[in-house]
Image 1 (tube, rainbow over the protein chains, first blue to last red):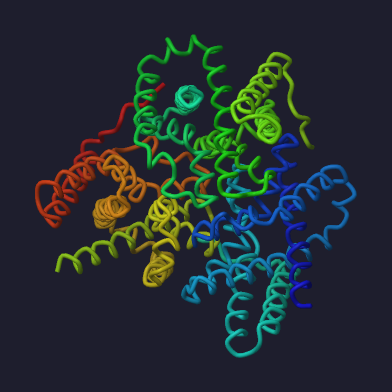
Image 2: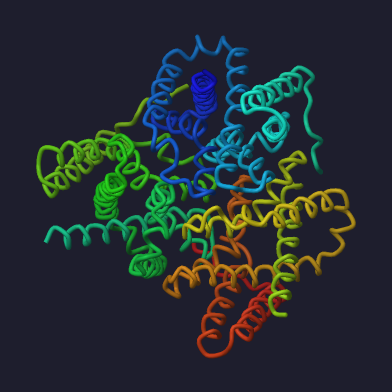
Length: 201
Length: 201
Length: 201
């Protein structure tokens, strides 16, 4: 059951990341193809970089046609119904945060399966959760928002640490739940309280 | 015979992509080294990304010293005779389009050889044909022209579909010819008619 | 003994690259996390790209936790004591140049170990030494400084050629010393004489 819940959350994560990619791209007057590429990169860029770094190739989305299909359909629907979707800001934010949590966990799991040091696994989790957005911003010719706004990576890292501690002392599924809970709590509180890391001048 | 024709077209494709890289780079006042790097990335960037995504390493140009040599010589000649070469705009455009067609096919073939889903192979073809230019634009600090101008990727995708259908129902060489023909027709008509994809606002 | 000297120089190289990354990032008003990521990418980006190109995965820094730890500590110290460190401009420049020399050699060695053509190995050396800075500049939304300023890559390439000739005709350690000597001499003279490659207009 956990597996199908995971798969469901991962799917909603991909959908949320795709939608966020579409909305970022639309601010730049790209054509339809450009918007879909940006959406794709936002959704799978982090996992792709992770897979290339650890040598897990062909990268995940190439071995699971379901992922590109979900992104394509979500992307087209988002473009067509952009005004309508924009209204669901809070829902999208929650999905995006859930996706962040789950992507972090899958990244850590990939690292553990490759027998890497826990600290490296934590970095892989962060890369998986956050670097789709970084590549998106590079393609859109902007300094990645991850580097100067909001407690995004911090939530991801904290959730990753909770997961790593969780699997050592408790079961897999409890660790997953606690980790996703941590990511969501930190990010929601951070946005509500307008927390951000101090800038370095 | 087809093989040596393919190799000839691939070489002209690499040359055309190199020249296009040189001209893009020259607009940015780079030094000689910078121009040559941009030319190199434009010519092999798409194939390199494809190879890293499917785990075909060391990447192709590292196993075939002929490719860097062709790029280096073409790059230096282009810099020295830039005024003269600029006159051959139409010729360059045709070579570039031929190169796009052939790169698309080699990308699809690499995917098929790795037993990937035809839709993934089509994406690999597009990456091979189009993403050298995307990386070039990222290095030159611009939003990739692929995402907002001209029917470039569309021609590539259409040619790829024709190729995939062609190899299922006809022979390899007929599929290649039809595919390259499709890429060239669409791109030439698109440029003549000033077609472009609708922007998303 | 050479080994521990190499390791010492490599560590100082990583430290110098990390500091240079921190100072580049601070000009852009990133937050602490952003600065550390940029520092990390500057220090290991070139080697990471090299490893992904030749298929040496998981990439080097993932198999050696010492490297991320050195970068993290150096990064935090640099942020805390930025005013103090800024005073050691000449020292930093020398470390950076030493690091460039040693990174070039490790890149060439990785290529030779993969049985690649010497010219390809030279390119791998250049990628290892120079492309951390290129990725850093891409993330900071700037045209890579490597492409338009200073004799940086030239020093690297010259040192690489000296190394390749050296290991054919002399011993490994003499080749290393001569190579690093070449990189340092060229770069120091270039900066003193304000040499640069001619721009291409």
